[in-house]
Image (tube, rainbow, N blue to C red):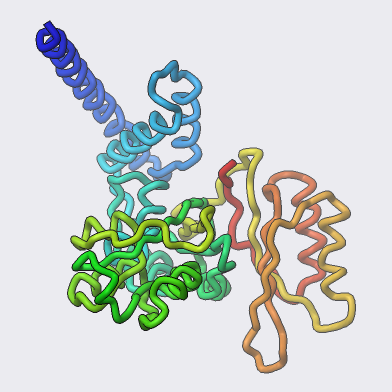
Amino acid sequence: MADDALKGLREQIDALDSQLLQLLNERAHVAEQVGEIKRREGTPFFRPDRVAQVIAKIKAANQGPLRGEHVAAIWREIMSACLALESPQRVAVLGPFGTFCEQAAIEYFGGAADLIYCASFDEVFHATASGSAQYGVVGVENMTEGVVTRSLDLFLHTPCHVVGEVSLLIRHNLLQKNNSMGEIQAVLAHPQALAQCQNWLNKNLPNAERRAVSSNAEGARLAAENPAYAAIASERAATLFGLHIVAHAVQDEAYNRTRFAVITLPQTMATPPATGRDCTSLIVSVANKPGAMHDLLVPLKKFGVSMTRLESRPARTGQWEYYFYMDLDGHPSEPHVAQALEELRQLCAFYKVIGAYPVKA
């Protein structure tokens, strides 16, 4: 009796799968028609605000038993696959396969995006600025180790701007070819990952060399070639490079998140419209005089704009001058933000808005 019941349920699932496949292909045909209209009108193919609206609507209509986040993940992939029929999106990421940067790109664009793997964030910016990639994804900040300084420096001289962000929960794992910590002579990872795991490494592998490489996935690739090496990387990297996970979650902070910025040229995508939960990022410099930093903050207080991040980077002029990177709560289209930015701009020797974009709740 149980076998008969199970057989009947499987037949129901098979029938539902056939219906789902038919409906998905019908949706894809409509998406192709949308793509033709966009192509004729010259409008952007990828609209992250539209993706967010559709997913929010689907989640609100969901009656279960599927959880909201699972429904969202399914629909993101459906929309990504349909978008690939309209126009495949070329996205530059830090390579090789298996980086957290790749994971962030897939979370934002879906698995159908055409990923271009770069050896460094410099190459990601260059690929995006030159147009060989329509978008780029770069790390900008980690909760435990702070900002990714190279990314901040690159924003200063690039024509690209930020149109979105992804926040990933980072779980580092120790990967090794032979599934043994006893043979490890060197641990390879991106410098940020090594810093995020330094206490664990001090305790468990105090005599192993720590070797910085261009990405965690590159460390995994090298560890797959040499049993004396171990890598700190993701579970995806372990699968891609055929490595054992010798130790799970070796990061020092359990709640370790990294922010990634989605960048593009303004002609590829203009500044996204306000959503009610947005961030405006800018770079400024002020004259080196007493009270200059205080004066810089006055317009923000005057118009009730909250500053959520402030970082300084040397201007490299040889005169001890600095650029300041600021994140403000709000969107330039909001009157109080616009007024604060206008007064702020008049106080600055250098002023550049590098993006206004939705942030995750």
